[in-house]
Length: 619
Image 1 (cartoon, rainbow, N blue to C red):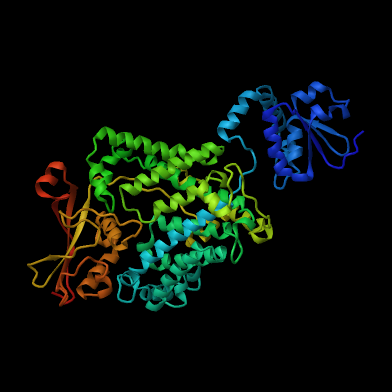
Image 2 (cartoon, rainbow, N blue to C red):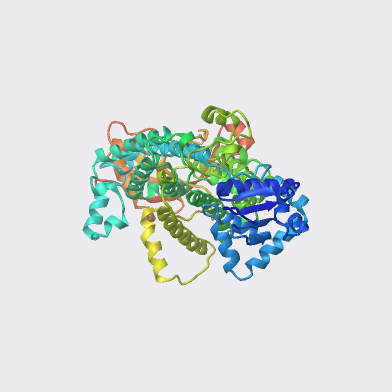
């Protein structure tokens, strides 16, 4: 007779595979379910044949009703928080029950094989993973990235959008105010509607640096993450082209999710903190998948012949925006190596991202592959904080147990490699599902739309979804990605020159972009010289498509100190030039022979004027 007040799950105590999974389920259900091996308790249930105990688990409800196989498993897990959906699917979805029972019997009849597979894919320990330490590391890395981004921009902001800069924010917002009604506050969400002065530019950049330090120090991380996101969004809106790069979008999207991922406390303590939201964790993993996978898809969907025939990397190292000296050496590698590298790149971008959703150890493998890929990119190019931010997202593919022992000892005080940190669960101190679930639904819907576009699938979206996509777009926090969809096979380089008489022209040297043929390409990452980057994009089109370039030239004619500070040196320190011109050269890396004989890293060929000669005096 069954006098129990709790469900009882009976299993094969002689089966190591069974014991590992029972320990896992017990950690999920806690004391809501009792567990016992049939070798000790079968005699209490004579109505169940002993061979049935040996072939499948048996769940005995307090009412005395018994269930076996997959149904017993799902009913057991329904007592675990957040796991009731499994039983619902089993009972409600046509075909789910027979497929589940067939799968259960397959596993039960081949326990040794599946035991080995489980150890290989997941490990010996099936306890639910924790992500408190990985969240701690991720937020520290995000704080470092924000710090780099704000400091980098702070040193350039006056020359870019200050009152004497290339694109004065006051002029921009005044024009918008005259042409757009109250809708402007939604279309251009920026704090500069309150104050567009140079002082406020400095304040917001300096404030971003201060807030970044607070995030690194783990002070009010959720609130600070919101202020960092709002500050960077405000700057991205008014800086326009100068803050329109994919890593700026990635920082805003990552920063937005971090608001809901970070602990909601003034000074969180690791050992007393509640676990992070698994919903937001998976949204961040989805973001990493979207970032890497999209980069591979856009290359194939672009029909660019250099990607199709695997020759793109033959051009990449010398045509990328800001090459490094290592790029020169990478460019000298044989064609077979460049093609093999392209194959490896496509494998990492198109196959490896699916490991993000794989079992634990395969997910770790995917993490290692993506991190290694980002380190290779860092070693041969200047991509600002992009690679660091991508690596920070990779941290979230790990769990607390896999992190280095030194961190576990220093932060948690754990000496045993297999010892897991324990946490006081206080779900009231994290964002409720009432907030995170709607955010997840919106992000997944928009992400699906973006993937349709990447694959060039033309569908008529329902009006509510179209309105949702348009409404969310101004906040730049659900984005599409895909670097180098079309490989540039030549390197047009703009050389800006000034003159007093229209005959003798002196070049304006930039700090980092190619100019002097003998100057070694430099590493500048994680700092980003925004003007140098925009010069690369400008060279790929016309000055008519880059109105900022004319503004830049006008500032040179005025000898604007803020704009001149963005350059390496001013060839007209005493008086501004009477004329400015921009000429285009085709730049190519030299080879070993030329470099040894002439000491040059580049060779170039004159192509012509980029834009008409400019003057403020109407000459």
